[in-house]
Amino acid sequence: MISAGILGVGAGIPEGILTNADLEKMVETSDEWIRTRSGIRERRIAPPEIAASDLALLAGRDALADAGIEPAALDLIIVATITPDMIFPSTACLLQHALGAEKAAAFDLAAGCSGFIYGLVQAAHVVATGFCRYVLVVGTEVLSRITDWTDRTTCVLFGDGAGAAVVGPVEEGEGFLAHYLGADGGGAEHLFIPAGGSRRPADHGTVATRQH
Image 1 (cartoon, one colour):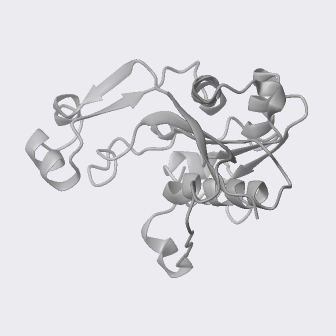
Image 2 (spheres, rainbow, N blue to C red):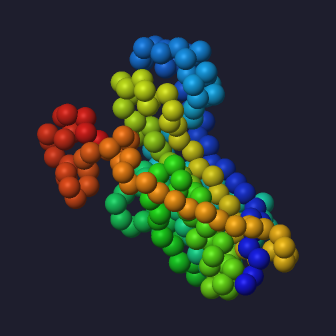
């Protein structure tokens, strides 16, 4: 097995800032309440013309530059997101084209907050087996588009941004040492978006009742 590790990292962050003071004017909350429970002082918010793939492109370019690797050398692109540009094609395919990574395979991975970790594990495994040499993993979200800004229990937590890592072969004994993944689907009822999927497709009613 080949040792796999992170060769470079990058970030894509929008300029817009929503502070806790701003949220105090929107919902019943306070800077102290937010900071003591989450540690968050501000979050970044993307403008309407910026989508998940745009932030992913910034982060991907940054990570590739940090690793000293050209886009053409990528064998695989994994994008972890629950706020893709659209249902299909995948955000990873849009990123692949924007980067000019012509030989790279590409797919999206939807695992919520843990998505980037799932992506890293997938990347490490394909590098370790020799199936791929260089893999770009990107976590990108524009959560402001699906956040309920009237719900103070959740709106204080989320913002927009992207992070990326290039995974590739490293010296033996370096890089990733081990991985452990788990899940608990039994908790699905506690944090979810009810409409927009095959169980409850979008319609005038779901939009009117704020189920998205």
